[in-house]
Amino acid sequence: MENNKRSSKFFPRTFWVANLMELFERWAWYGIFIILAIYLTGSTDEGALGFTQVQKGYLMGTVVGILYILPTITGAIADKFGYKRILILSYLILASGYFLMGFARSYAGMFIIFLYVALGAGLFKPVISATIARTTNKSNATVGFGIFYMIVNIGAFLGPVTAAKMRILDWQYAFTISSVAILINLLLVLLFYKEPAREKSNEPLGKTLMSIIQNLGIALKDYKLILFLFIVIGFWTMYNQLFFTLPVFIEQWVDTGIVLKNIQSVWPWLAGFLENDKHGINAELLVNIDALYIVILQVFISWLIKKIKPVNTIMAGFLISAIGIGLWFITQNGMYLFITILIFAVGEMTSSPRILEYIGNIAPKDKVAMYMGTYYLPLAGGNFLAGILSGDVYAKMSDKLSLLQEEVSIRGLNIPNISEGFTKNDYYQKAGELMGMSQAELTGYLWTTYQPGNIWMVFTGIGIGTVVLLFLFDKFVLE
Image (tube, rainbow, N blue to C red):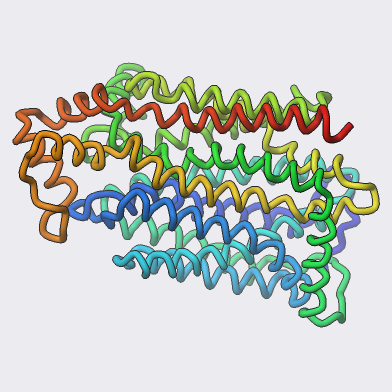
């Protein structure tokens, strides 16, 4: 066991090993997650799966929702059987799961394999956080968790960059890279990870799990906590559109070639690095600006708001993010995203880290840990609802293919149904020919006629509604 009695200036080796493993795990996860919506719904003649937006929404929302429920249980399993064993199991599942995802072609197959990946991620999450907690002490915990959060975002930034380059060559390469990142973690845990000091319990696992469920039940009897958790679901529902909807929206509606030309005029090398095979920029690289902003600004934002009441920073953050998401596509100009994603990211950095702190403030002093265990529940609910909105609602309001099919029906044009022999891209091409438009003209016509950017007003409304409810909750329920 590794002794944690270190001065505030130093951290034990396992602390740094855990941070390095977090970097590679986030690299792997975000490398896949940020491109997943595009991969699931893209045209099959480009190597994607060709699923509908509704199928994408239910798959991503359900599986990731389940992932965020798992840590409530898997943390107890890790305490029972040891962190190192659970990390090894997690990495074996994740490495094989990411690799297999690249070969799944059916909806059911992808759903099952992604659920398998979620199990591996659910095993990993509580162990790595607990390791950081057990390898820091009161004198260095603030710095330790600050380092950890920075590492999270470095991994979250690097993953999409490598995935974007790999998927240009072949989609399977993107999944393979994530698998390799996890195999690096497997080597790290086998060679360098030492079990941190922890209390061992001889209590049967079943009894431990039952205690966890009972404690959750006790915490959830507090109507104040339940109300707060339901309110926060609104924020996570809005926030997750960054991954569920934005990549697809950019892919369908934004001419990223204009963005590339603007970057070319300022920084030719960067433009050359970002350029894809269509002489534009992959959607996930634009979405990834959010992670870059967090890496650069999080420490400053945290310092700026440290003395402000948690509820005030949470409300301000929710509101700023809602404004940012509403401004994402007032215009079809992709350059505008650099500003609007910055606004969104500032809101995220202001609010997200303090939600857990606010739960602690709601809790009675003798039940803080019990209440903290509910933190992942709104994340689960937010992901599930985000999936529905990015599926059913997006399909009706903003999906380029759905809107084009509506237009084709209105005009009475005869175009074959999408099938194995007639892809989504074939449909776009045929519609353009029959309507006498180039693909750029077709996109512009659909944008002007159907106003697909209005979807972001829906998400802004959810964000603003969340702020109003949180204000009323803090003003009238807590007092």
